[in-house]
Amino acid sequence: MIYTALLVVHSLFRWFLLISLFYSIYQAFKGWSSKLPYTPRFDKIRNITVILAHVQLIVGLGLYFISPVIRQLFNNFGEAVQESAIRFYGMEHSLIMIIAIVLITIGSAKAKRLSEDVKKFKSIAIWFTIGLILILITIPWPFSPFDARPLFRIF
Image (cartoon, rainbow, N blue to C red; front, side, top):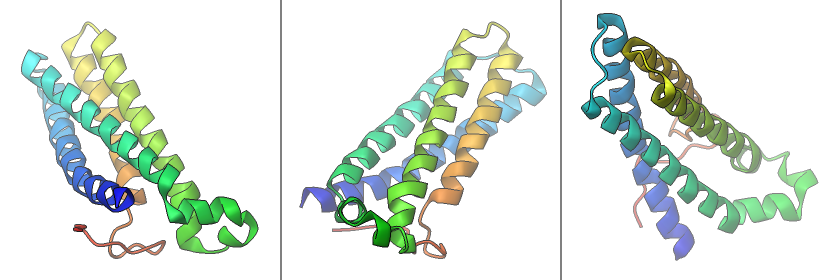
């Protein structure tokens, strides 16, 4: 039951995170190219995006540690890595998503420390975009060659 609930939450939060990332990146590129002032409003957008990314990571880690797929990977590693879906969730999805969240966090932290507004926008635009690309590549979309999953999960 907890596993199913976490799966639904993880699936739902994916959309919140993606929307927030797209919006943050759009605003960052706009601010960078137009040399706009870095306002408290944009700082709030950056912060919300990072919080959503970290919540998604925590829920994903919770899933990782209770998942029957991951249990199968660790119980029979040699055979399990031969199956693409098990290897995808146990290794590729997990590792690349962690890297993406780390990159988003780095971009956010760098932006907070910079004093020039244009450099803040540039940092967020670049780091968040790289993180978003990694996330988009590693989401198990319905058309994914690794393991097709529905766009929305329900109980």
